[in-house]
Length: 159
Ligand SMILES: [Zn+2]
Image 1: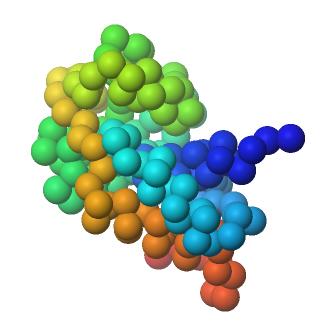
Image 2: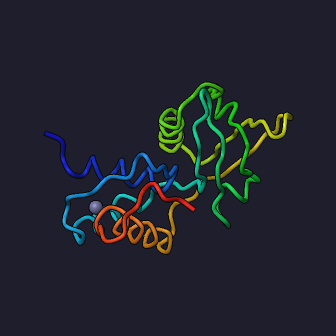
C-alpha cells in the first residue's frame, strides 16, 4: 500500500512543473490535510515555471509562466529541448525531464539547456528558484479546485 504523501508529490509536481491534463486525478486526502502537506513539500523545492508538451519523441515548451525563472532565462513556447545538463533529451519524455530536474535540484540550481528554436540551436541558462509563498498558495488553490471539488470539472474542455 502506498502512502498518501507519495501520491501527493506526484500530483504537485505535475501541476507545478509540467501540468498535464492526463495527470489530473481526484485526491481522497482531506483538503486541509492535503493543503498542509503540499505547503510542506514545496517549501524549499526548486521552481522552473514551464508547461511542457510531449512529442513523439521529444519534449517542447508549451507555455512559460510570466516572471518565472524560465522566462528570465529566455525560454520560449515552441522550444524543443535537445539537452539538459548534459543529458540528451531529443527522445526524452516529460517523466525523464522531471527526473533530470530532481537530480539537478539535489545539488544546485543551475540548469543549462540546448534548445531548438525555429530550426536554430540556442543555449539557455536558467537559475531555478525556490517557490515563493504566493506561488505555493496558488498551487494549493489550484490543486484543491482540480482534485477536490467536483462541481464543474470538465477535464476535456480546454480553451
Ligand atoms: Zn489533495
